[in-house]
Length: 113
Image 1 (cartoon, helix red, strand yellow):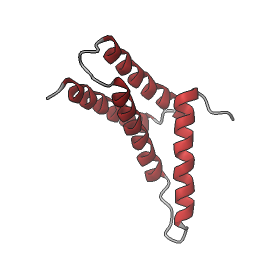
Image 2: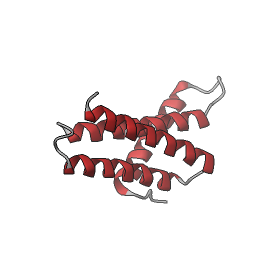
Image 3: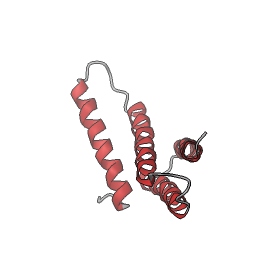
Image 4: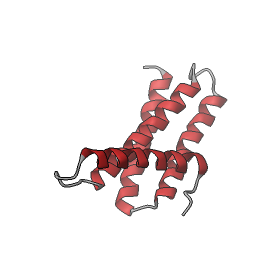
């Protein structure tokens, strides 16, 4: 097993556990995304300080970011189960907004109210 696989698998496991705890404790979206960003940034810092472990740290960062966003979207979709008579367009619009919302929180820290 390569070092990148171990790092990626460990961080994905941590992100999954953080999401489970955030659902259980009903953490604020901003707090949750800030924790996820801290974990990914710390991983990025670690691989940056140890370049012999990972050939392309940007790839690892992107994989972890997309994984964390997918976890987020999966949870949001589970919470927004809609009746069958509502069109799929509403679900698509909601998923698009949730993606935008997550990206905004991740990159800017707070969502304007």
